[in-house]
Image (cartoon, rainbow, N blue to C red):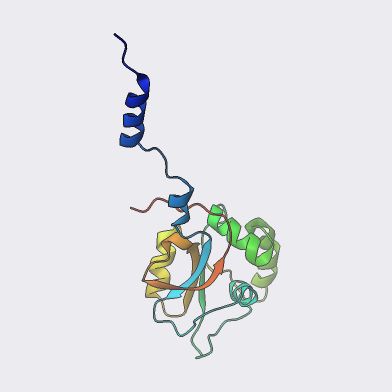
Length: 157
């Protein structure tokens, strides 16, 4: 005698629900977050001000402390999304700008190897500012600007 297949399929679907649906994915914060250390006196920044900071045109915070922007590597998808949104240019397209700035004694922001390195550096360094996927902005940092850019959240350890 053959058993009906439907109850077996329903049991399997209940036991192994598969990938998260749209409702579950919506719970995770989307976009990029420009971050500073928790307790920072800066509450919010605009896109134009962030562009000035990362071009090294704005060098000091209002309290006189030095601004220390940090980047991810040029090939990093988060860096590419940030550069596109802030400068309307890809990192490679900023090379000419930095070559010109070099002759004026200006160097580009430090480059750190991972999003977690950015969070740690920003949290521990007075005046530091960086960017990470919004899902990685934890209590060590504060979000001073959110950019609605579709980026995937890396798997957290």
